[in-house]
Length: 147
Image (cartoon, rainbow, N blue to C red; front, top):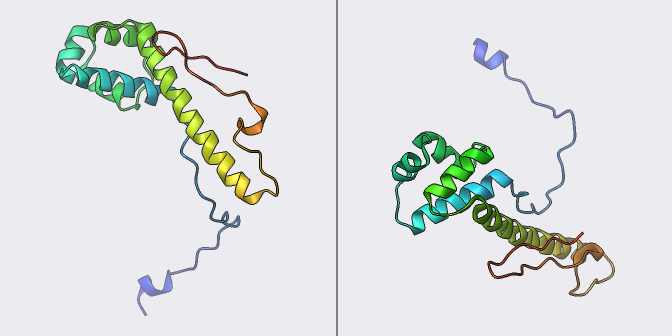
């Protein structure tokens, strides 16, 4: 018999595997949202990573990582990137906030649909969990967060 055959063993999990539950979309991370805004704005202007990175005086690989949500940029870096795109930091943060609100609404709807099917009663079309609805307002679609 060879060593390869004798060293085979069954793997027994220490904890039982969780039952298959439909996965909700992943909780959005701020760095993902900000990076998405920077990339969308850069592409809408038809500009390259190199162009924006040079204008912002940050390295092109770092800007790429920020856009892909791999790096959590400081406020100075975000302000420089925003300025290079002709925006202010508040614009970038407001756009990221709007995206966060829309993604959170999708997660809430998914969660309420999933729990509504398993529960005995229906909550109707109101806000899930007794929370007030969150809605954007203002001239730039500013973000209004309700507790």
